[in-house]
Length: 500
Image 1 (cartoon, rainbow, N blue to C red):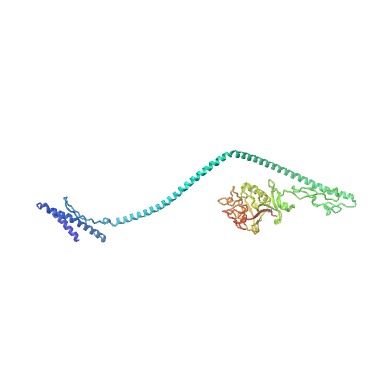
Image 2 (image 1 turned 120 degrees about the horizontal axis):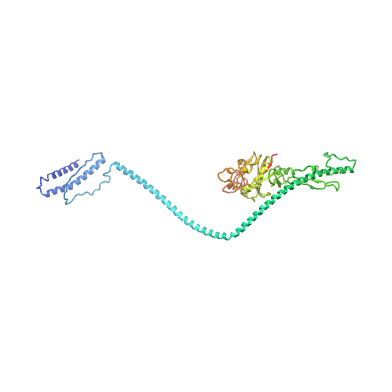
């Protein structure tokens, strides 16, 4: 307050001085000049002190500001002037709201700086990646140049081999023509075979009737030679025996039907001029291996089969010794000699070797089991010599229009049930995907099967020697309930037989 009062007094003095200047015009100029100089020197210093005190008061307590207005006539200033070199605080003219805005702006700028740092780090990573990509691009460019050169070289070689390929194509066309001719000849032979079969049937009936007449004539001749001997009646217990005790088989007079028995001759008589025909074993074809067994064929081997509704004769391996015999083998794996990773056409018509590994063919299996009620038997053997089996009391396939959909019945056995999960599923191959999986199970499992999503059994997979195998997928010959999906079995056979 004292300083403020002093400053006000100085200002009053200056006003009085300037006001009385007109009345005291006679005062020397020196006195007036000195007074003006004194005011100019003292006034800024006092004003600066007052402003500092005002600022201090405003920060320490809320006190009203005092504003001063100075009106000074223009004067020519000469001499020394007091100028303060002290620096004013930067926040001298800033209030609280402006300070808060400055803090917020500072925080925003700091956040932007952090974001820029992150962008700089990302840009550094991107730069490093770009350098790596440029290097890879240069390497790829070099590799592409090499491949282009190699490609041009191969094109030149292929151009030189065009003539050979053309000749090979011609030879392939010729071979195709020959195959078609052979197929036509095979069809002709099959028709001739059917015709000969009917002829043989007629001859067999004729021979049977002749045998019956021969026996009757033989009996009459013996009765003429021995008048006291009474000829036995046909069909009596002594029918088929000569007087001296030599026997003639009673089934020689049996009628031969369906073209399954072919006669040969064998001399069996008591007199040199009597020749009796004995009926031999049949040569087929049979409906299935069970009928061949009933016809006296009790040895394992390849047999001719022709289901009554089928349109052609087929060959199959008959298992006549295991499990009471009569089994028609439709699939067999034992040494890996046959590739089962093949197409729909091969699985439909069959492939492989009948005395080794083979697949009978979906079409043949369909006609075979369509004759009646059939059961399925699967025999398995691992690489330690352990055997297991799985039997299903019903087995049937739907026609090709339904992609040979599988139908199996109840299970029994000691291998575990790994086929019922595939029941009612269509057959799938690499080129005809019919499974329930989004991908192609035949591609992953390397075979053809009634895949679901994908398999609990895969008996047409890859035959891995030794059992345990390492593969990206479970593509071995496995039965999951027996040895698991990562174990490829040593031997497997699938066979069917009528339910009798």
